[in-house]
Length: 161
Image 1 (cartoon, helix red, strand yellow):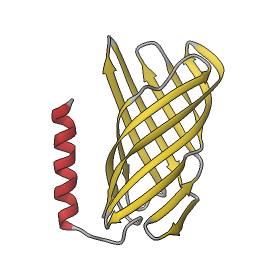
Image 2 (cartoon, rainbow, N blue to C red):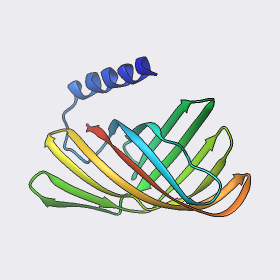
Image 3 (spheres, helix red, strand yellow):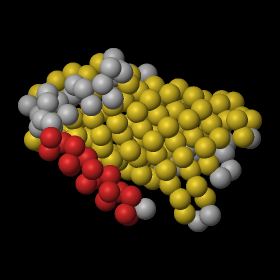
Image 4 (cartoon, helix red, strand yellow):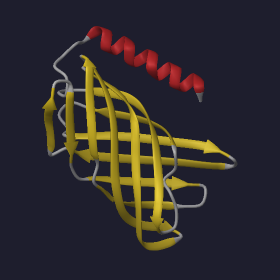
């Protein structure tokens, strides 16, 4: 897993070195640590590494997360549309919008909606540091369970180019 993270970081740094566009537009790629707390329902989408990215022409910011250990494996996919992405002051921005999640693990599969609220810090362009919390509401498919409530959170960085 360490090798995969190192390779992703090196590839992102190489890509960023070729393009220093206006931040928060176009394409982004980054890594975060994702956490998930289950409040009501059958299971969590897992805590672990998250690859966050945005592709041009699509308004959504996507995430693909995974974790493994103790005989368990979790995979999660998120997609968020930031209908608000506003400047607060100086280097600080914030975002809010609807999204979706899908999580599959060793003993649980779930999907549903989420509402991410995030704080962005741009110490240097094009590097964004971020922290977000996303309450989630969904349906457990294996085992069948409705409703499921939880809170997803992430802290990490993205390069915008």
